[in-house]
Image (cartoon, rainbow, N blue to C red; front, side):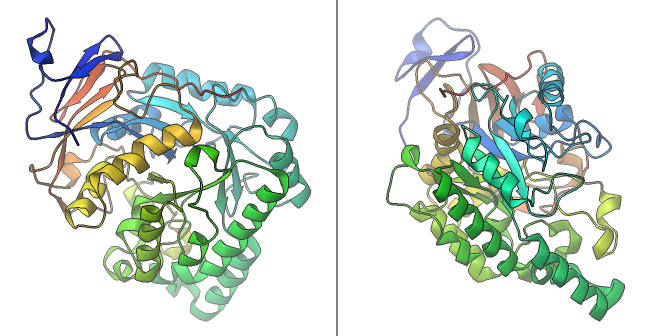
Length: 430
């Protein structure tokens, strides 16, 4: 960490160095005693638009992201309708261009029958291809091996996967239904969506990627066993198989189900403390490359249902940076490593053009964190449309003071400036 001034001109960082406050400039923000970090790049969010806007919209959740220091996001295709065609994908970009306060990209969605459409994707303007190799809705589950081989062998850029073995989960589900009926609880979720289901699918995906030379990125690793599938002996820019850890798998474990219930029902499930510790260890060692949120809001009413009717997922994008800062204060991770995993590495992994770093000439995507301003999460300060968080009642010792998106001061001390929208991200790919 160094002490410097940063001069923003237009959308970009013009100069970095000491004494810049004496230069002719417009607005000056005094950041003394605070950390200026690159804006976080979240490579996995679900903002629910189109088709599920009673839960969230690109507008509402991009505001939550910016309030949390996330300046850029990559959003998933499981909306209604799913982003299975180039036109449906472009429709989402058009919505974001008018309503997203943060920078944005959207994954193309894979189905069992849209390989030809997927291969039309412009990989310089789209973050990647998302394949659900575990339960999802509609035709989003890709379970045909020949189809998977087609995607893995032919798609020329990053494939991001949700890995859980569907037959294993279905067997477990039936067993628990027979044994407990409607009395199944959230605490049984990691037994139904078991570690075996995760490892079976993840290891299959890794083997398939090795066979075809695929750039595979496995999302939300949730077990200790899966961490051993990944390599830390080569630089990230040269890796073909990479992995992501999510905030909830780093923060919670199965001891929290009694207290939080369906609020922490996620797919893949939050598992044991040993898994939680192993994921953090793999993150620090470089086997896991990035930290994201899998921000997936549902209404409070939906989450109050019994197990089989309560949807999986929850809102996290507003609290990811401060949650990681809290782990730093607990002595679990250095700030430099947080910046690496939330800013630098997503930029390297996805080859994001001119974002993810505080560098002269780069876009001024910046977040100012006050490490000594504590606050408590409550319904009153939650920005996400759903109005709740698994962090409700949690006191964080750091606060996101300000967020710049492409040079625009979009958020400062609880207030938004929506006079300028975010930008579509570009990717340095051939």
